[in-house]
Image 1: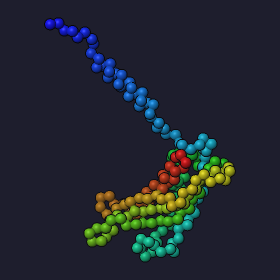
Image 2: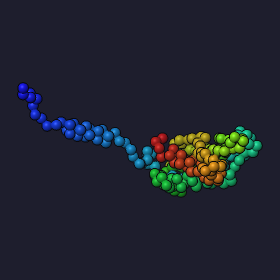
Image 3: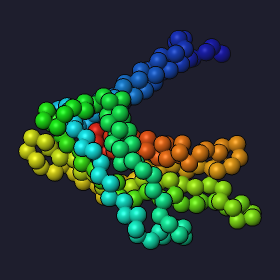
Image 4: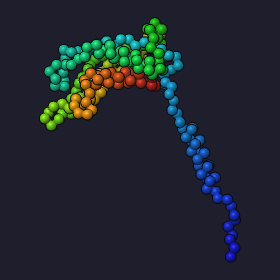
Length: 191
């Protein structure tokens, strides 16, 4: 009996090539990643007004501490960190108020150190630092509010003992850096 099947070349390489090209075309069409900012092209500069200190240290603390904690000049550290983060980000250039397209206003309203974990003998093992601000972004040319965020928080969690222990000062600096990162992201992301 003779073989009825016609002699053809193996089709697998062609099928694989077509499938690979199809995936490549679909993948290239679906990629939308960009490193550019989502803000309007009319905004290129920003003025960061010095953050005002509105922390009420006379108010009773809700965390069980007898006295409210506070770090002197915290508002200055926040202003400096936000300014530096804009410089690092590069989407908006910090400039003087007179030549800025945007104006960022902020006020420091709370600074908390909350216990998170305790050891077996009731000693605090882990804290969370929260730095809370109210911020608003204004069009500096028209004096129009673009957006406003109340109770905007930067935080950092740290251990007081063990291999991952950090000092409170280092944790506060890390919370300030987190707040600055969030402020810049909120500004340059799509409103």
